[in-house]
Image (cartoon, rainbow, N blue to C red):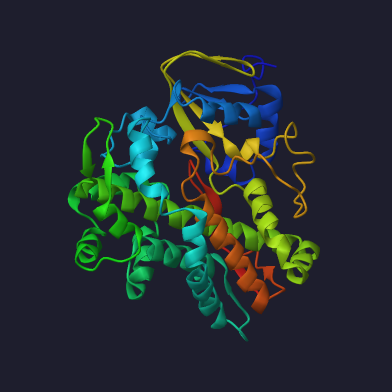
Length: 394
């Protein structure tokens, strides 16, 4: 069935109520309107796993250069140099290459002991208590400390990263754009790292030399560094905290599987993959179409915006059998939570590390917990979905 036949079907990324429990609606999109058109906001929507993946792979016809956030595309916002996720090759390739050396599995393995120490220290204060907010008092602290560590923020100041990004969900890229020009929160830390170099991202960015898209060998400008640091800080805090939060709620809902993991910690990596599939922290991305492109259900015309719903693709029964069942024994190959292709999430290894460590340390101290559903609050934006508050009883 094409979009023109699905007259009673409506999806809107700006309607939080539609996206609190969206999976039945996503199933209808996949079945009834795999190429959906939102007339109110004038954009197309892809919801099937193969179509979402193909859209991400086709970076020449479906570009990031006008942003991957639908409201920014529609508003025609211009972004400062260094906002690499909103760039296309060859500029994107050059800027991403500067950062990629920091987020390798080897570098992530090197910081794991410190991330584990942060997580354990955070949880120790709740031993013997009745409970705590799993998101506000654990997930967000682990994520903010970890990104602060990678960036090169001194430990005494790492929680200020959380304060800086708290409440910015949904506007992080606007903040990053403004602060890149104004100096912003991180300017003093970058200056401090220039005088006190270390093995961290800020030091790398201050010293790296690369060949830009014009063939000129140079260093990053201060504006580019500020933009990238603000971007990584906001993205790294928000989505990773949501991943950890979903882990807490899903394992509370599935206590038998949680007990299995507590007894066999080798199940933790694939558990995190299933959490990423089942409740993707990043709900959707967007692209600008520069040539007509065919997908299931029809053709997206040039000069159009398209939203690609990763969370729907991760529940597509065409790729994942029995997708509405949470199963820690699933081998969820082909999940779309970190995008795909040239714009695959540069922080994927770090997010997985934090998810693994946060769960492992939690199970060491509190193998059983339940959620206070009355106090749990969902936080939904046009791009992300997760818990804003998740009080638990231990």
